[in-house]
Amino acid sequence: MILLLTQPRLVAALHKQLTNNMRSIQILILLLLGTSCQGILDKEPIATLDAGSFFQTEDDAVQALNAAYQPLLFSNENNNFYWAFAEVTSDEAITGGDGSRPGIAEMDAFTFTPRTEELNDFWKLQYTGITQCNLVLDNVPNIEMSESRRNQIIGEALFLRSYFYFLLTQVFGDVPLLTRVVPPEELKVAKTPKATIYAQIAADCERAGTLLPDQHAAKDLGRATKGAAYALAAKTFLYEKNWENVLEYVGKVKGLGLYSLMPDYGDNFRKNTQNNAESVWEIQHANLELGVGNFLNQWWASKKYEGYGFAEVTEEYVLAFEPGDPRRQFTVASNNEDYFGVVYKNSFSSTKYSVRKYLQAKDSVTQKADGDINYTAIRFAEVLLWEAEALTALNRVQEAQTPLEVVRARARAQAVDPLTALPPVTVSDQLTMRDAVRHERRVELGFELHRYFDLVRWGLGSVLPGFQVGKHEVFPLPQTEIDLNPFLMQNSGY
Image (tube, rainbow, N blue to C red; front, side, top):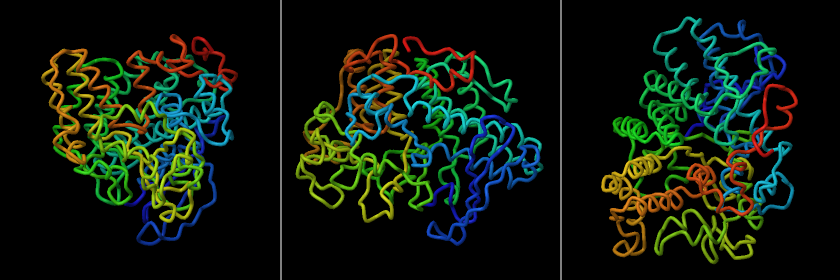
């Protein structure tokens, strides 16, 4: 696997947002020489360029587009704590760690405020990506290049902008919608209703789907595809409870004929089996000691295994698995089980359980925080569960059994006793099927950064201690942004 941002002979532009002038670009260019990820990297000096002067050639456009991928990474450079919003605030994990990140402890206890550092970092990171996408979309139409190449670049930028906005709405709800680069004086705008942002995402993903290829060559693994665009549209409609449109776009994803479940569930979380047939949208990481590695390898690993021990797994989550479900061991380490070459003990975590996903053996990386296990933001298993959820909501319960069974059958086949484990769900009652689909999401997608947002969209946030209905469905907007923008109103309750 070659990381998109650092692959051979491909210039990767890492964009640093200029707060006072969104017409400027600050790009740190990383040039990888040689023929593999182990090549020599040379860093060019930082250059601040006027956007109009910068966008002259196709190579300029590619550099700018590559920079839009950088904010996706779970890296130390990004300080991307989206995982904490999704997991620590949920019922899957508690804070753990050593107390060095008070903001994460606040998420666990629902005591976060507009001044919580992780919220500010996340806001800036997403808008950095959005700004970079807008720079591409504003300038690429004026560059001379082949129509097919222009379409692909525009499609990728549309998809990436949609993805950044989707994450922002998950965390903050209504946020300012900016679809072009504007002068600084025009940045002070009010929040845009989430429904309007969803409509923009759906329209942009539909357009991106018409522009993007079905697949990329090996050297471009990690770039957005047609399937990723249609899947993100489906997920957006899921959050709107627009069930018919969910089914339409799931059908578009399935109609490509590219995706299927891997026979081995664990292959979705191993270095040598990434970007596989189950991967619809996968965010690439690499162990290159350049800030492009996956820092979850350190943040989630037990302190007894050179990690920080954050996001310790709750016993409640472990007990959610049915007897014999092999996904528990793929997801969670328990007493006397193998833990990347050592024997896991109860003392490795205050809860007696630790996360396994996105972690790897310590001798497989040169730096603990520089892991090269990718984050698969959308797996085909989840697409099937969207289909099952939508069909159930439409009271097409018998039809919902089919995609649900595909997911359960894969897990059943890996059980110690497939004849008794995970029997097919054949209920006809809508509410019972709804609960079965929700259960399946929980055990199939555990620690893949979905749980808190699932509980909120299902209206089940009140099961979490400290959750206040009418307040905690969204996080507070960062106080620094409120101070800078007089038109930006704080979320209710904060």
